[in-house]
Image (cartoon, rainbow, N blue to C red; front, side, top):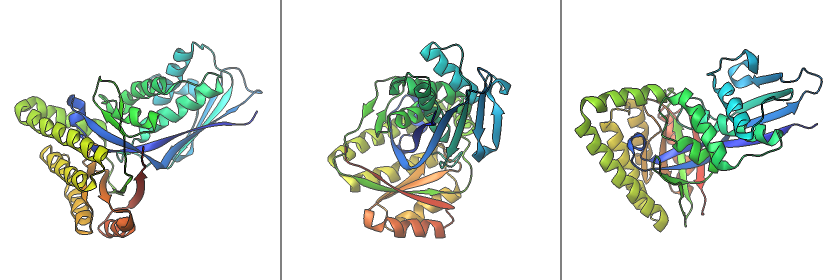
Length: 315
């Protein structure tokens, strides 16, 4: 029996990170230039239920039954089986590879969950709908982030730009005019769970101050939605830069991230900001497609360890 494959893209948040945890809207887009690939091969000669897991990127080579119950792989398998009503698995080998940087704000954890859920349910003969895939990825994300907002699993599962409010119906954004982003990796890991926890502690100490910042973030996200739907990229760029200022006030930016944002603007970006949890990870810059390569080069010269150019297509 030939192997079965499934894929999941990365993601970046355009606006509203951190505020989205507190009920405000955020906008996120998939990044198809990086992705997780999950492959399953049947092993008919192995004992029934033997699930061999290979993840060479993290030097993982083990059997599912030897993994802790709260390990993300265990959670994914358990949730898929529960969703499908399947108690016993056939013998199989799961191989997971990824080009999404880990702990960089590009959704690597959610993408792994999505890709595995897709390939496993397909292998078992009952491909799950995107809604179920997203729910399983959300449950697994608790392991990575503690209190995930749900935006990563949503945008990665559906593979579309989304306007997301926690607990509200998903809204896919219309995009009449494609736009280009340069993503620049600072080289420092961004530990989402820790950053979110530390910010929550500060919010609890001074709620009025931070709720006011989150309110301003909501205005930016709603205005950014209008700018996207109107194809007004100049306005969208300004809003991204305004959002970066708010993230500085939340104390989740760093001197290096600020330098990369400044470099992008000086090189001709329409707007730039950190994307994701912050305290490391990536910045994004909204750019004219013709200047993307030169801006990416300027960012690498300023210390970015890697850059990705992605286009958000018309939809």
